[in-house]
Image 1 (cartoon, rainbow, N blue to C red):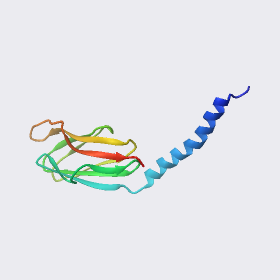
Image 2: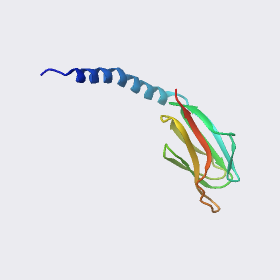
Image 3: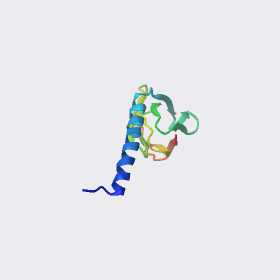
Image 4: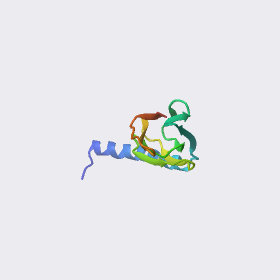
Length: 126
């Protein structure tokens, strides 16, 4: 059965691109994570100032601390974490998607739902 030219192109592209994608995934999993401390006080991020800037395929750990219990949501990556006073909480991700993603509160310990952005995770292309 003859193989079409299109099928040959698809097989060749898959053979060239797939190993690179697998290598990038394995490479990012073996890298030491970049730890970024995010401190929240009085319902505001006090450090770091401004957006958190990283590069695509970075392995990061966002280490949150807060003066009151808060449930946080990293939009775009659909990650949620609950932070309690005196117990830092860590959110680990590999930054595959580029863009500007808000980190919002989805509930504070002493009342208040809030859904405004506390800060942003900016992922820049490699």
